[in-house]
Image (cartoon, rainbow, N blue to C red; front, side, top):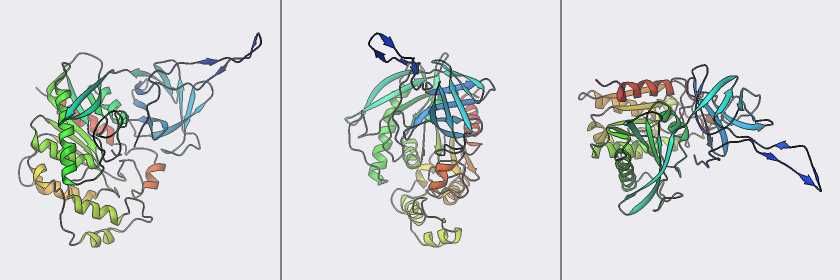
Length: 386
């Protein structure tokens, strides 16, 4: 989700003065780095932004237009970012800290949307997991979603850019340390072997049981979300448990593991530059049989609302075959599937020229329709029932 290993900063960002004393005389107070409080912020212009840590950088994401920037500290509570996710110059965004719960982003004042946070735990077949529950403001019962990890060493804070979005839209969020990561027991395994995907699906369902059992949660409106490899995990989990009431997938495959891996090998996992042509991709996949886990039957069994958000130029997951497979399944019956494909979308759903990993790093942000589209889908799926 696509898609990162994070380390949370302090939850509370307050100005601190450091004094240097020589004998009986103190030097002039020098302000230390002042960090914005992490979380969602509603700006005075109506836009929603999120401040969080990703890959060692404090970042800001504007959900209204997808702009995604890494930030660097300046004096007096100012943070600045450049035109891309990891491009810092020239300066294109300015975030100023104005207290523990207020920031300004390019002059627009933002007020922190502060969720209620609880640290929880659950077990799956004897394996202990550390989890975190985020509850929106207001009165429940709330709909809820479990963020299912992808193949990376994900922890409870890895997907904060998604967690902050859901909470700001009135959806409770449960995240957890993947097995073998941080506070969770077990052995970390990044493979897409069928047995491992099934194990991870059981972990996700155990997390969903924990979420649905919380007194603030409506168990009739709980589901799973995640990207990349998590798509297979969620497809398995949703097909085998009626507790899953909806699913929202990002850059997630609806094709067999062997054919997906063959595609990734052709593109060198998005690193081959220039990228292979459409003809080269089709030639490389021609005659490649399905193998490993094939989600076709599981997807065909789903009669819940499912959203697929896909990048048109994804060089790590083959969007054309995923779309074709979903359309073929839809033609066989009545389904509540929504398939959104974003022009220029890479595997991370950031806007790029042709989906290369290097372009994702310098991308100005997510495709503009990603978050407004997700918000509209959540509204119609979770909040528009008679």
